[in-house]
Amino acid sequence: MIPKNAAVLTASLFVTCAFPMLGHAADDAAQIKPLVDAAIQPVMEKYNIPGMAIGVISGGNSYIFNYGLASKKPAKPVTANTIFEVGSISKTFTTTLAAYAQVNGQLSLSDTTSKYLPALQGTEFGEIQLFQLATHTPGGFPLQVPDDVKNDDQMMTYLKNWKPAYEPGTMRTYANPSIGMLGVITANAMKKDFASLMEGKLFPALGLSSTYIDVPKSKMKDYAFGYKSNDKPVRVSKAILSAEAYGVKTTATDLVRYMQANMNMVKLDGKLQQAIADTHAGYFKVGKMTQDLLWEQYAYPASLDDLRYGNSRELSSKPVPVERLDPPSAPRNDVWINKTGSTNGFGAYVAFVPEKRIGIVILANRYYPNEERISAAYEILTKLDSK
Image 1 (cartoon, rainbow, N blue to C red):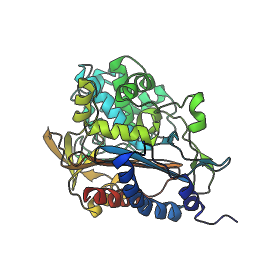
Image 2 (cartoon, rainbow, N blue to C red):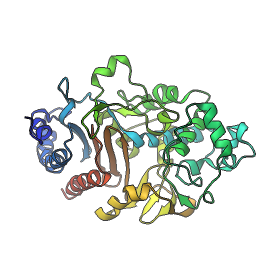
Image 3 (cartoon, helix red, strand yellow):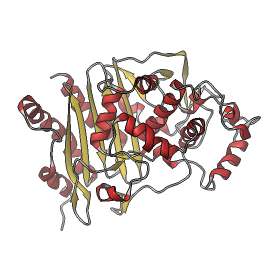
Image 4 (cartoon, rainbow, N blue to C red):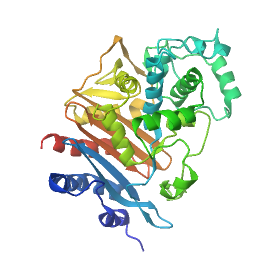
C-alpha cells in the first residue's frame, strides 16, 4: 500500500538546484533550500501532489528546486527539463504580445475591436476597447467559452450577439473569452497566427528555450502529466481560444527567466522591454489590488490576507466593481506582482517584487487552491526579503 505522503517521501530523492554549485551560490542554495522545503513539502503532502518545480530569484541569482514525479506510470522524476502547464499565466504572455504590437505601431490598446474585426462593426462587442479585453472589464463574459462554440465562425456569431451585462469599464469579470479575443486581434494585427507569433517570435525574444503552445514531439518525453482528483492522468485539450487564454506549457527555468525579464534583470530588445514595462501599468483598482494588463499588483509590503483574497475563487468567480485609473498609473518597482494559473491537472503561481529583486515560480502537476500557493510563496519570499 502506498502511503498518502508518497510524493513528499519521493521528493527528498529528487530535489536539485539548476546552477553550478560553486562558492557563495552553493552557500545560498544551502540556505534557501530549507525555506523552500518547509513551505512546499507540507502542501505536497496535504494535496497529494505528485510533483512540483520551484524557481526562486534572490540576491541576483536564480535557483530551481525539483520535487517528486512528473509521471507516476512510468515513474519519472521532475527535472530541470520538466514541462508543466501554466494555465492562466499564459494570459500575461498574450498581453505582452499585444503590448509589443502596440510599441511596434501595429495596434493601439485604446482602439476598439471592430478596427481589427470589421465583421463586428455595429455590434456591442465591436465598441469594446482592447485594454478592456486585457483587464477583464469589457462588460461581462462567462469564465469559459460557451460549450456550443466550437470554431471561429461560431465564435464570431456569439460575439455578434453578445450583450454586455455591465457598462464596459465598470466591473471586473474574470473570463477567458475576452483575453482570448485580444490574442486573436493581436495576431490579426501582426498578420500571423497566434501560435506562430508566440513560438517563433515572443518566446525566442524572451530567451525562453523550452516554452510552447504546442509541445513538439521531440519534447513530449519532458511533458509532465497532470493528475485529476481521482488520480487519472490528464493534459489540457485544444479548444477555441485555448492557446490565447491558457495554452502555454513551460519549465520552471524558463518562467524564472520570464520573471527576470519582467524585473528588467536581463538584456532584451528595447521595444520588447518597453512592452513588458507597459504590461505593469495600472488600469483599474479592485480593492487593494491594481489590475494591470493581466498582471495583478499590490503595494509592497502586501499582507497575506490581501494576497489570498485577491487571488481567491470568490474574486475571480463574481463581478466586482472597479475604479478606473485614467491615465493608467505608471509601472512601479515597490509592488508585489503576481498571477495564478490552473488547468484540470496543473496548478501554477508566479510572484515577484522588482524593487527587492526577489521572485518565485511554483509549478505543480495537480490542481490545488490558489490560497495555498500564495501562502507558500509568501512564506518563502518574506524570508528571502529579510535575509
